[in-house]
Length: 471
Ligand code: UGA
Image (cartoon, rainbow, N blue to C red; front, side, top):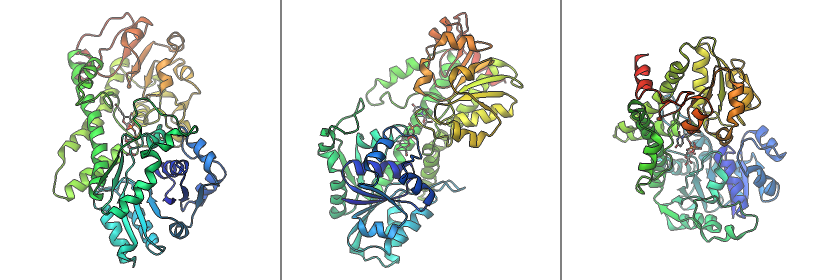
């Protein structure tokens, strides 16, 4: 099928490349000429596994790039809107880009088109798109508006696209649903997975994925509710971790105990320094704002956000507890991205923590496998950048682990010990077993687990949190 994808940001670029790999003819539309030129010349603007491979495979063949939205609409049966919906000061999603695309689409309609929301948008957006098209003289039977939200995680976006838990289609007519069914048929009928060049199947995924049809409003709500629920799960376990710290329990054991309850499940129960990224923080604000507008005060979301914020402060207090005063202390930092596997630093708790520590007078040398350049744009010369984890640790009073990169969980601990001035590790992502760290001579602090000294002795139960609340 001929498909236009409007917006070559994270979602648009991944969806466009994946639709092309499923055999569709895709026109990726953007109004940023520089970005389009880069894409045409083989540049890949984001760090995402398999993406460059897919772009290479289809660029200039069944995946083309254009700034002519009108021509792309005329040529396509389905138009996916994947433009940005940044938060406004009130927490609402700014839908002006969506509106402007909808207006441009209306003047190019030359036959039945399905206009699909791919960006995360609040409930009622599909109705507004419909109104905008009608106001701009599109005939009512010339189009339908559908919602087809993505559940892609940065770092695994391409595999998430091909191996989703489900494909969600919000459509209010059979005609419209049929178009979306046809687009996803290579996945739902399993033919894509039989291809020798198919993107490999990750563990714990089932093929073919189910396709769920709902109303457009339900689909819009599902996307916001899903992200809010996942953020709630993270805040819940972070709150439990804080209680564990107070009583000397181990959150890892608690997670194992609650995660094996099949009604709860083990995923998204990793405590840490709080969630970040371009989705959860923005989507929680937007969901709360839309609920409020519809007459419901979603106070649970306030608490989820408060716990998330608090988690960073608790980590800072841990650094204080480990090092006493911070002015002039040298810290090695591992990780600046908002999570492992990506170069994205938007709303990264690691960046916020580094900024706090710099304000407190620390000298920081940081290493991130992918986010260095992006971090440099924000942190400028306030910190130094290392080219690997050991260089970041060299001569430091302590090492902080702030992002869950895989490579940080398998460091050579003897070498690390030699590099540090004092063998103190404060791990915001629980990448190591406290006993192993103690056996290697580290004083080791983590989240929701007893801190251990270099002699292998646990700090007194509750000592960390009592000290923290006294400070
Ligand atoms: C999230 C959702 O997981 C996707 O399903 C969704 O499609 C996407 O938002 C979106 O709306 O576009 P993403 O923001 O890429 O994906 O990242 P996640 O893997 O969800 O992680 C978000 C944050 O939570 C990260 O800072 C991560 O470190 C943190 N996290 C995650 C935890 O602290 N603990 C966990 O157990 C899991």
